[in-house]
Image (cartoon, rainbow, N blue to C red; front, top):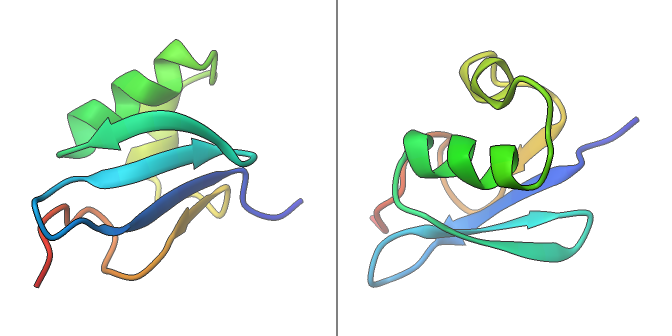
Length: 70
């Protein structure tokens, strides 16, 4: 199975859009926000998923865990 969660490139104003199978979950400004968005979507063990850099998360257009545009 490929990635399920996509963390899109950082916005020029900060934060990254997060989608789950194409459905927008919201904007994350840090890993805590990402965990909360995943928890709200019903993802089991979102903390472990984010901390482990799981293959289920695709980080697009920036380095993982960075939420500010370069």
